[in-house]
Length: 220
View 1 (cartoon, one colour):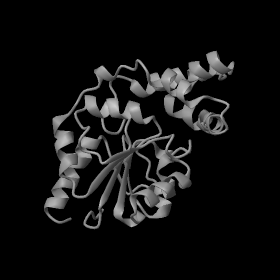
View 2: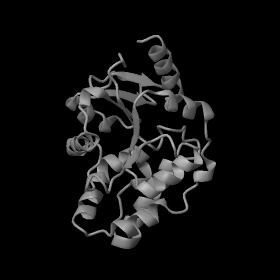
View 3: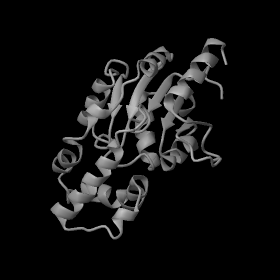
């Protein structure tokens, strides 16, 4: 995949910028499930059988709709989910930071999480000065990245064309809208399935960054 025309590098946060050996995403998912049960009396049938990704795929739209319509107080929801997570268990990687910093052009975070939490994670990873901006779930109007409108809003904000962007993401369902608009797409932690909406796959962000920087140095 050529990188010569790339001016904007868009990174997901959780399970993308770091290898999640601490289980942060699973903690977020568990907190969301408990919030819906304890605060709104909604039990998720067989929730213990769902993986974290399956939980958000099945129930994410329902939660987003309640946030959008004000049936859930987003501040209360975010505080419940993102406070007291085990961020200190995340392992910072100086090489990952260095290689992201070397990428030519603008670097931003695009996450379905919440901005203040994202700032805490970036600070812990010592990446708080690399990314120009963080675009979160609230900023999109509670539309997840599986909604093409969230990408359209992002491109308008960035004042760039999709062809100039690369989206780096660990969740498969978040990449089709990006590809449809014309972005180049990278799937981190692949499941060995070839998708027509994924340009590259990598076991982790570090291995991908090493490859990218080598290609940039040799002008693709």
